[in-house]
Length: 191
Ligand code: B4P
Image (tube, rainbow, N blue to C red; front, side, top):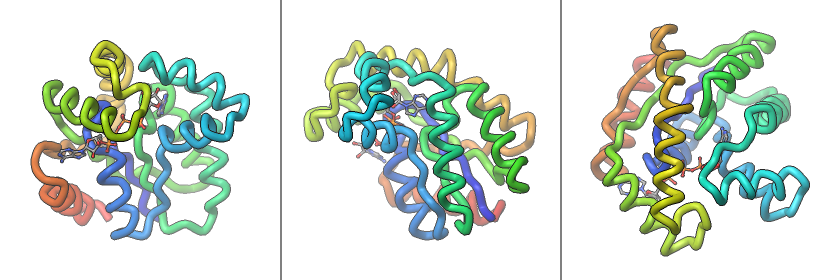
């Protein structure tokens, strides 16, 4: 089983690249952002609560996303592996993911971390906001809040995987194809 974490700041291209990686390596793509947006669209209790956090550019509580991921892993017992997109986003989530995987006799092979500067992130997210109407992508102040929460709460997850020798930084600037090729080069070393 090949289990990968695709990591990076908001707008780094995690969703874009995770879709391609899941197709090439036949992995189940688990995006906590997409799962939360499905809950919002279905107007579930979880979705209504999560929307309040997401519209402000804040993280959804750890326990909510951890339970969501554990459920999805158990729904896909025969998978070749998983690509986790946008999860873990805090050290508590990273520790919980390790526990969930150990309990099932598997582990993370690598954390692929897309590196993109703030100026590119802001441009990409505002462009997507204009096209998609996503509420958290429309306002520079909310995007700024997401980037600052990333720096404070999410970036320390790098140390968690670096201490396990699983941290693989990847340049996230260039064409989508160029970045995909860089990611595949790293994956082919660990798979
Ligand atoms: P996510 O849905 O995970 O979204 P993201 O970080 O904004 O985007 P991503 O990096 O996937 O960017 P994408 O490929 O789409 O999170 C949204 C919210 O959900 C969070 O703020 C939080 O509230 C909540 N949430 C999710 N997971 C959580 C968790 N684990 N814990 C707590 N809360 C959680 O790319 C962005 C744009 O750039 C796209 O328009 C794309 O077309 C463009 N792009 C991609 N690659 C490009 C390239 N190479 N060049 C130019 N443009 C590019």
